[in-house]
Image 1 (tube, one colour):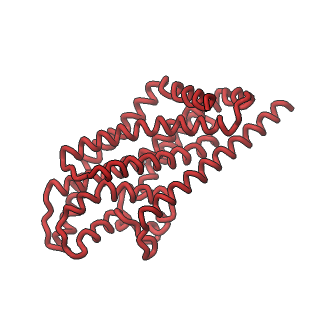
Image 2 (cartoon, rainbow, N blue to C red):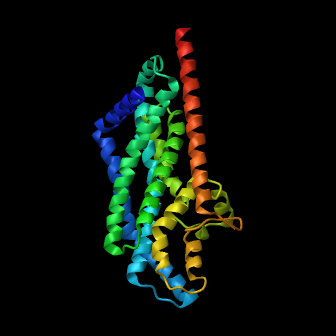
Image 3 (cartoon, rainbow, N blue to C red):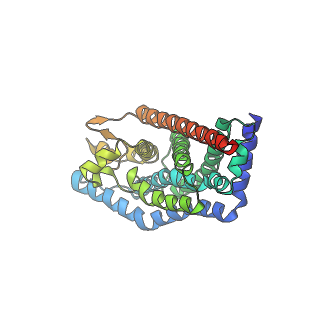
Length: 303
């Protein structure tokens, strides 16, 4: 355990030593949150207002509308940041691979699985710190425009964020273990940042996508984490809407607060199970792959 803690501390120090990378990772989600608020908040409020007015002849309270739109924007931001920031935080492993330092570690008496786990946990800690900071700023924004979250909602959102970071870190670890240059990580990060929001349903509700696209996306693990965030950040605002037959259910369905898997509503515990199992499988595959790879390189060097 002491060796593992030393590896984690070392990797974190190396990451925070590069101030430009750290501050860019820190500022990126805050800038995205500002852009979301400035350009998309009104769009989601108008979509919700038109839907309620046309289908139920209901006018929504402004505070509830603001809380609803803010919850959507914050949940989308955290869902994307949990993955995109993990790719940046994994830069330490790529740097060690580029400089050859990872070969020195691989021939040390430290178990290969522990070395791989050290990279994973240090990346997760960095990503968690940045995502929780963005979440705190988002909570402050919701407190200003309209706060309806309960204590249980807050704890569930924190749990959702934690699990999504674990998932994003595992995903980035597998990809980054295959990359052999810092430029490669930057390129992959750009691709992930631009596309992952659509792949997990963070940028657009499934109701706005073609049926075949939404059907495919429902098989992706990240989708389940995004749906959980939507429900826990928007559910309280939805519960403050008029209690008319079908109204709240229609809003939850339209804005992906619940996932319909080919006619079956996915329960929250199923979503949690999908994410946890995915994390376990990805982390196991990552540790096994790196351990075998380093053993192979060690044998090649001896020859």
